[in-house]
Amino acid sequence: MVERLLVIRTSLFIPIVEFWLRRTSVKVCNASLNQLADWMPPYRRKVNSIKQAERIASLITYANRRFSIYPADCLTKSLVLSYSLQRLGHNAELCLGARRFTGQFEAHAWIEVDGNPVGEELSVNTIYTRFERENIGPKGEFH
Image 1 (spheres, one colour):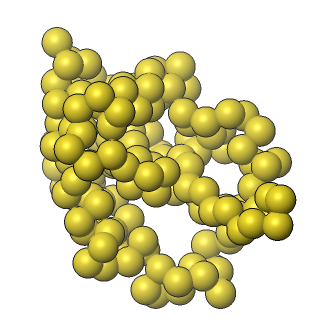
Image 2 (cartoon, one colour; image 1 turned 90 degrees about the vertical axis):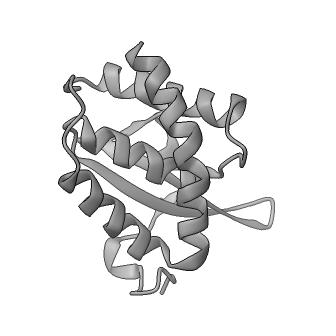
Image 3 (cartoon, helix red, strand yellow; image 1 turned 180 degrees about the horizontal axis):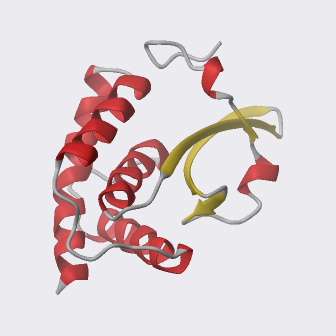
């Protein structure tokens, strides 16, 4: 029942976060979601393990693919995952990175908990060069 509720919440929350991102910046949206997660009462069951965090990530991916009216990209999905994990007691960190692949520039967003990528391949840190927090400007632009 708890997992079903998370899937429903996520399906409804993804379009809201996507709209929010289009009206503000990554930095503002992330900071606002962090404040909202701190302000909201925590979910009843605290999550304390990476295995449980991975389960939350897979439920969010499932909700995005199956039920969301607006399928999310990696950034929106990562912001929703970060919010959900923070509500469950994790210290989730939004990571942004980039790489050049076959001459093309590719960017990616993911979440780390205690330095471990959640809902990603373990090699995401070696595939993408991670931007440092200082390189993200006040409006979410990269320097």
